[in-house]
Length: 81
Image (cartoon, rainbow, N blue to C red):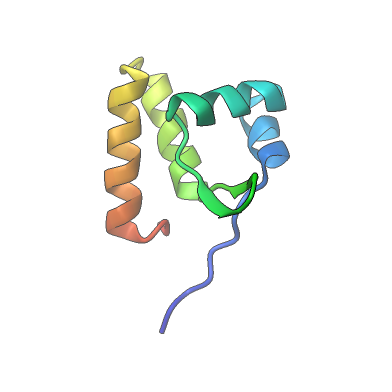
């Protein structure tokens, strides 16, 4: 049985990170925030990926390294924790 995960919008991620939507867009563009593409320009975010991004940022790791860790961990958990 598969569990449904609520995905976050750009606005929700911006609020969570206390940054602007433009900053979220820049993090997407640089590949630092993994996204779920829904078609066109629509994107959503897995809450687990955002949490891992925050944790990686707290530990002052290189954002590119953090991205690889986020992708690896969300792939292993299916985005669920």
